Image (cartoon, rainbow, N blue to C red; front, side):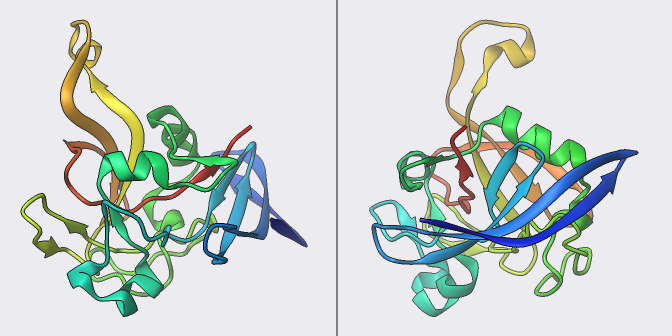
Length: 197
């Protein structure tokens, strides 16, 4: 279920204009409602996913924290976590978003210790939810927001063929930059879903 606000903002970035539409969607599985933002041809959840399932963890196992920051998902869980009609964004889909905006424009206006709060000019409202290490240790809340992509690291990224086992691309925000990094699938990162199109 999706609702759209009638307010449409025109974003000017890099000399190009993008229509920004804010809305909401309700996850029929648990009834939770999420804010959404449409930028150009992409519609993103404007909140971290908070759907409870195997492979999803609340920071320090505190569900009160998850109400604000969402859950931290292993990659395999994140690949299954998005509701019907939505999916975990690919590396290419992340590139499209990041090429429109720098880190400050994607970051929320509160909660950031690393690099200060953002402007949220994009409406994406990135939150510094930290991460869960494969050992089960939670780190970096308030410092970094880490978001899975669906794209496994390919040997072609290094001039070879095939995939590199158990390594996936993700995006990390901390300062006013968006970093493209890779990590093991067992680590817990935030999940932002993008609408199928």
